[in-house]
Length: 110
Image 1 (spheres, rainbow, N blue to C red):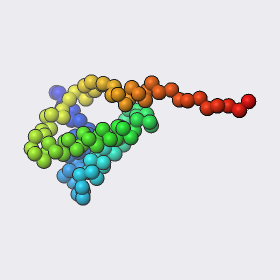
Image 2 (cartoon, rainbow, N blue to C red; image 1 turned 90 degrees about the vertical axis):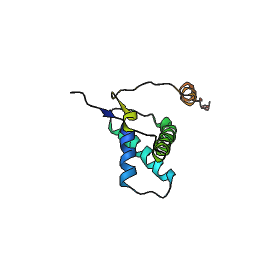
Image 3 (spheres, one colour; image 1 turned 90 degrees about the horizontal axis):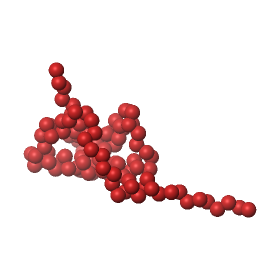
């Protein structure tokens, strides 16, 4: 028997959309992003501290896009079904810039 694996971000999005009330879109997307990051922390995934803020911003954008699609009737659960594996990983310019950045040496007193 083959099981469908639904993206956890989509599951959190649906749960928050149907079970909670928010005053604005920003609060909703921020909450979904923070809960998804907490979910990632509960797994074996490792998110470097220096990338957490950019990841949260990206996740908020994903949640916002899902909300807009949901409002206009374009989102379907099957769009967020995958085999439970990472589909593709592409380094962003910000990631490349941060990973190649070398810390400055502090001058030492002689």
